[in-house]
Image (cartoon, rainbow, N blue to C red):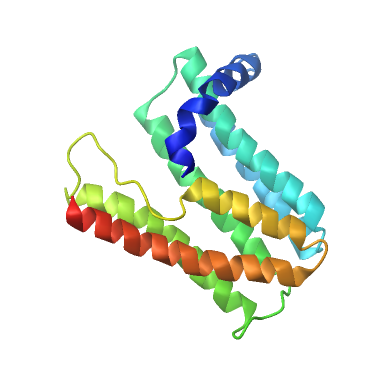
Amino acid sequence: MLYKNRKKFSNLSVKIGILFSKIPLTPNQWTIFSLVPAIVAVYFLSQQDFLLAGGLFIIAGFLDMVDGAVARVTGRTSRFGAYLDTIVDRYVEAIVVFGLLFVGLPGFYIPAYAWIFLYLFGSMMTTYAKSAAKEKELIPDGKELKGGILERAERMIILFIGIVAAAFNPMYLTYVIVALAILTNISTLQRIWIAQKS
């Protein structure tokens, strides 16, 4: 999983933080700004311009890296900033998934919008399984529930691949959404199992 390899990206994160800290925006403003390309991506998805939508999706993901990098480099990390980042991350994912409803994707056994719902539900439940375990004190203090076949970073990479592949055949995006719908819900079940064993 990508969370196990985050240390490998620390040097890159420092360079990004130094570069973007020169722009007069606070880390929290960078966080909010990541919503903009995600919202614009919805328009291009509705126009079935998958390459532009995918490009904007990547920009939104990159900006999600910028806020934390700037915060660390400038010494402006905060609990609220981490909290806001988590909330906006989910908004970005939900906004892009919402845009998929306007694509008119072909179905796969059931309508595409049903798969889209199952994917969004699974992705939100994966996150909720983590926060609920902490709230119910199933995880020791100072630790977080991690694990599962897909975390947010993996979901975003797979979804990006699906959006770009749709430029060649929209059915490819349907297949990707079906896979995400299944795997996100499996991830939720895995986290429940991990929490139960903690």
